[in-house]
Image (tube, rainbow, N blue to C red; front, side, top):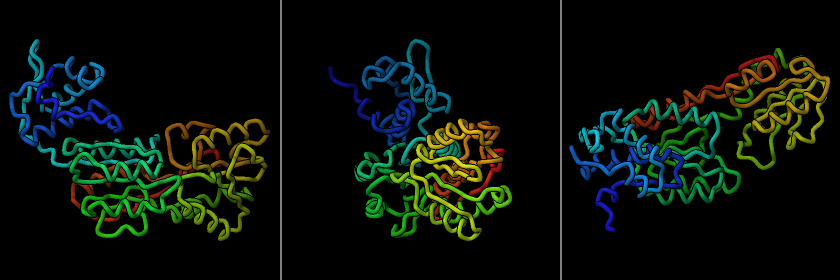
Length: 343
């Protein structure tokens, strides 16, 4: 049976992290913008979409309802959905590439998407810190994107990332979270200053840190976290005469009175807390805990975990502003200490 022509305009990318209902909605908007769908054109039924793309009826219906809510589609009971408004203002198409999913990455995504609103369609991909997949996704885009928003963190191969990134037209590029030396041209950036950030955050904590003699940072040997964090950490400890140690595996590290632990990975925080709880040491009195990246749970655990964190909400909002303003500005995002009972 021959496929109806409309299905040539609709796409689902099963490698994309963008929810399928949004991919469906975005492809319909794209077809309208390109003149392939016109006002009053009827759309496939929910059952037809479900069968053609191997998605659930709920997913297909959610895509249609999203477009109905923003005024793009209308519906007639018993007859289905049709194009209600063909004069759309969605001129931006964003290729969004994150290294991984996490609670704070979701904050960035939500802030970006909410600030852009209906002005943009976002194709969202995740490369899991894998340089080979990163390279493949950038070199084989299926669409003509107005902007590439990229978080560049890798386990291996990152030394070649600059060559891949430099293939992107710089007026379309926004680096997110981290600057990469060697990227040329006028591109936008919204970033953290990792070495300065940890140094100044620990300076803010000097008073509570004074009751401890040693600071240990849990920094796995195999990690995507930038080495600049260790530079800022060691510089602080030298400057203020703290004993210090880089711990690669917290599961085998002894816990002693007078020590403060800084964790980067949340699974290391769980291991650390478990080890402390089997001792007679009190968190915030005998041993201190500082955790990277604010999350709601850290406000509650052990009566509150002290955090050092960038403002992920602001990071997403500023990225959207660069896109909307067609700006190549470089915007550093503030980093701050939130002191709680664990220190």
